[in-house]
Image 1 (tube, rainbow, N blue to C red):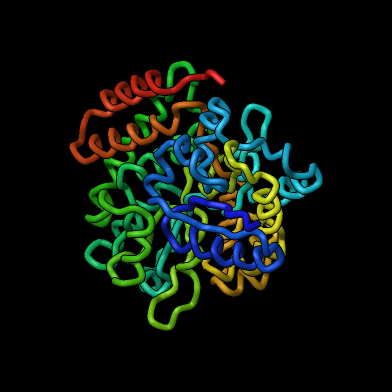
Image 2: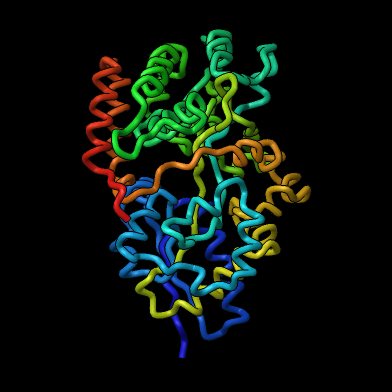
Length: 386
């Protein structure tokens, strides 16, 4: 009898293509197992609850801020119940930065990092050559580059609601060494105030589409046009660093930081999990073991538009040679990335927080009013209960 494993991923070649390719390879050696992969939007992936998805799908691509909800509502299989201790230990040893531990909550491992990412900087080397200015190393350097590039190719910072929130957290983490959220009272007002004032000061120097763009829109525009030379922070996509005859290569590097920062930027990436309501846990676990193996991550997964989560792929000379050394030039950022809170309710708060900050930046709302409203929403939506 054929077993059908249903999976839900996010709607982008990076999220879909490598899963289709690797599941087809897996099925060749497991003739009784077939797969069907569905897609949801990137916005839904980052903001919508996974509770309903757990009813319908066996395999779920998830974001780590949902781990608190998964634990509280028993939505995902604790993977230590299905995978060997040796395999989990190997995955943890080969985690890219804190990716592995970001899916651990309440003493259980609810997902494994099939994809690793963080906010990094992006640039068009050909558009920066004439400027005689090095890549920004500090936040202050962004002002220098922004002033130098006025009237030509510009600095763009994707500050749509979701990504403004992510960059806000990144800069707060840099300023505070990652200690700026109190689970009882919310965000540190002084830290948040400084970051929002920074965005207000930078905004006149940035490309006029900064408040409208997300990372994919920014990267697409960088390849299609010549008016964006540099992006200080966005989630990296190795596919834009692949040589393409008709499009310029985008290079990635570590983002600018405040002096003395221990944290670099916000951790992203994607975890692969098994629904606690799946009737095919054993078969789903076999696929996890296959797709997260070093050989598959470095090989078929990467070759099919994937951005691997296994450290061996990030350090592979062959893999790096294929994508303008994307992994080598951003690994430091991943190693020092900041992990968002993951308590129940935080994903709901994130969506509300991003919209609040975006409106405040667009309308130049007084920063203290913004921070007070932010913490009111935090206290209303987030909880320490497990």
